[in-house]
Every structure is written in structure tokens, then in C-alpha cells.
Length: 262
Image 1 (cartoon, rainbow, N blue to C red):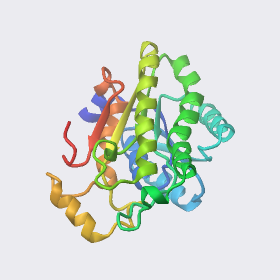
Image 2 (image 1 turned 90 degrees about the horizontal axis):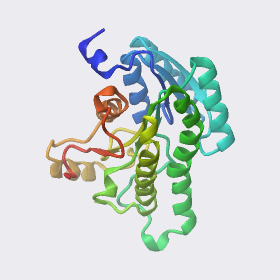
Image 3 (image 1 turned 45 degrees about the vertical axis):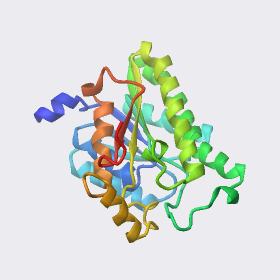
Image 4 (image 1 turned 45 degrees about the horizontal axis):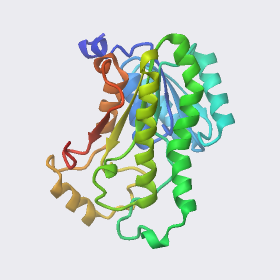
């Protein structure tokens, strides 16, 4: 075991990552597998992509399998969590990465006047609703283990809406508040709840419509002079899930190359 693995202490931990068939979720799942965790890879519909993520996790020495479920459905989430516990004996870590599909296109984004409340509601359901279902189903098992870690993926747009994606960013802001309330209540139980807030991550399914000219302007405004790749997000997630952050809860780690500084 490497010194890093020992410090992270993730070997043998059971991790559920939602929306993990590709992009950021796949990178997070693979990073956990690399540290020796047992990883349940949740996905909605893309069987081939989920199988690729499982193979990537196994290739780096981790134990992984795919669990197909719609995290927007309480019944489907309960069945998924029950199956993970049957398969692995419990759940130590949950990463809520799944979200309602969204196209990050600054030029063709809907303006406020174009949006209906139902657009906001869909994003709330995709962000806060999905996290609610997963956290609620996993909580009973974390209580039984006497602790655990939940990490929710939000966005740096909450602090600096360089592009006003109204419905998406408002829902992610609510997910931050959801996480902090949960952190306050679950802290005495030894269960920590934190967030990771990436900037624009490229390439992903959501960012493929973001034009090169906008990406270049964003890089020019970023102190580290590049955009995040999925692996950049995985490291902070592992940190917040691990013993290295054992005295942190209710926090938001911004991962955007210094565009937002707090």
C-alpha cells in the first residue's frame, strides 16, 4: 500500500457514485477504485459506458460493479441502495454526482424571460431531489456503521455566475444549503456532508456545446490558465471522503483553477 493510500484510508470502503458511467462521475469512481475502494457505479441508461467505467475501475485494482437506477425515483434509489448493501455489506461513502442533463452553451442559453417555473423545478428534482433520495436511503446504513461521508457535486457558478444559467445554478445553490443542513444534523452521528464545486469541466457531455472562443476566454481569466478535466474533480472528492478531512463538514471546495477565490 502506498503512503497516499494509507493516509486516505479508503481501502475496503464501500462507495456509491451516482451518474458514474462517464465524465466526472467515471473519473471519481476510477479514483476511488485506484485507492482500493469497492465502488458501486450508478447510471441511468448507458449500459456500454457503465461497463467501460467498471472495466477502468477493475484495471486499476478496484472492485466495482454497475447499478442501473433512476436517482429521481425514491423506489429505484431504495432498491439500488439495498442491492449495494447486499452485495458489499454496507455503505461508507456516497457521492451525489448525477444531475438533470444540461447544455452549457453561453450563446444559446435560455434567458430569464424564456424560463418557466417548471424548468427550475426539473433542475431542483435533478439536483436536490436526487441527493435527497440517495442520502435518505444510505443514512440508515451509515448510522449502523457509526459514521460515513457524503459528497455532493455543486458548481462554482453559485459564487460567480459568469454565465447566468438560472435554473441550473439556482438548484445547485439549494443543494449547498441542503448539504449544510444535513451536515449540521448528522455531525453528532459521525457522518460528514461536504460539497465540491467545479468550474467548467471539459470535455464532458454537458460542456461539449461550449464554444472554443468562450472556453479560451474563461481560461484567460483563470489563474491556472486552463479548464478542469474530470480527474481534477476526483482528487478533492477523495479528500473529502477520506480521513484526511475527518474534521471538515458543511464545506464547499471550489475546483476551478482560482477563478473563484474565497
